[in-house]
Amino acid sequence: MDERTRAYLRGRFGDYYRRAELTPPPDADRREWGFIPWTDGPGETMVRHRSLLDLGDLSDFLQRKRPRHVYFSAGRYEEPSASSMGEKEWQSSDLVFDLDADHLPSVRPGEDSYAEMLAACKDALLRLLDFLENDFGFEDLTVVFSGGRGYHVHVRDDGIQHLERDARREVVDYVRGIGLEFDQLIDEEAVAGTAGRSSPAQKRTLSTEGGWSGRAHRHVLSFVDDLLELDEDDALEELQSYEGIGEGKATAALTAARNNYDQLAAGNIDVHPAFYEIAKILMAEVVAEDNAPIDEPVTTDTNRLIRLPGSLHGGSGLAVRRIDRDAIDEFDPLVDAVPETFRNHEIAVEVSEDGAGPVELGDDSFTVEPGNTTLPEHVGVFLMARGRAEKGEE
View 1 (cartoon, helix red, strand yellow):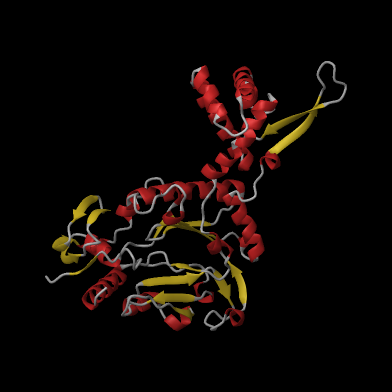
View 2 (cartoon, rainbow, N blue to C red):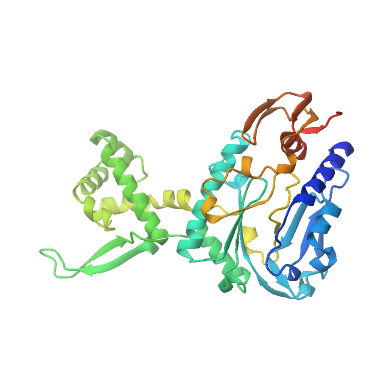
């Protein structure tokens, strides 16, 4: 990024902060603050170990410094401006989750468009919220678009504030489905033996409501629904595509599914040993499709710095935006996170060879060519912040 581009963005970020109304997090004076200025050179330098007292009034600080990125800590401290973590004297921490589209197994970086990546990340966000709200029962949640490639969720329930790293690791393992075994989800109960058997049999069921068991049951039943829509040959071929399932087991499992659908719907998956084996094999799909692929170190780190909602992301020019829980479905980051400050103007930019290509932003789609061009300012800011263009001469 050349000096003219850097100066332009810094100035326009300052214009944004003069108009913005930012709400600091709870206990802002007990948190560490950090920021990245618009420095020369290819790298970025983090300025951290600051308290809110060091920064002064947050609005005045942002207008004066016009930083490229702004962060605050998940942790609360006795001395937030101390230069080492030990000297800060940790008191408590929010539980923070970070979803980044680049890290999602369903996303193909370099192939999927920015809009497609963000759509996949929203799907992952909804899965995460299902875990946090329904499995854990958390109530004090703040959902934030990161301004870049994903979403953050801040959990501030009293019960999690003093969790150490190991306990946070257990939360991570749960939402990721790490170490989850099918047999752990099964409820077993003794039932009367069948004719010719004096000892009781074991009935194995999956809960149809809540938790990983409920997710596994929904997946198994959906698999059965799809299977029963196929003709017999295709259904048997589908079953035999799974490792260890030959023609005999496939036939037995298909017959059991056809004859015992009501029992399966009620959670009884022990309708035949062959079907139970199929259900157990499906567990890997359950975890792959239903887990929340969070950035694990963010959640386990009690000292993590996270972006300030309302600030600008220096790598996109988009706003780090809080999202009301009931507005998540309708939220479009490529529209709703475009700052009004950058709308309704056009600017000159010089698009690099590598920066040419499609852009989807602010209800518009563009294909930009290399060289000097005039674009809506929010598009120009986006391209410059991402290193795809430099500021052109007006």
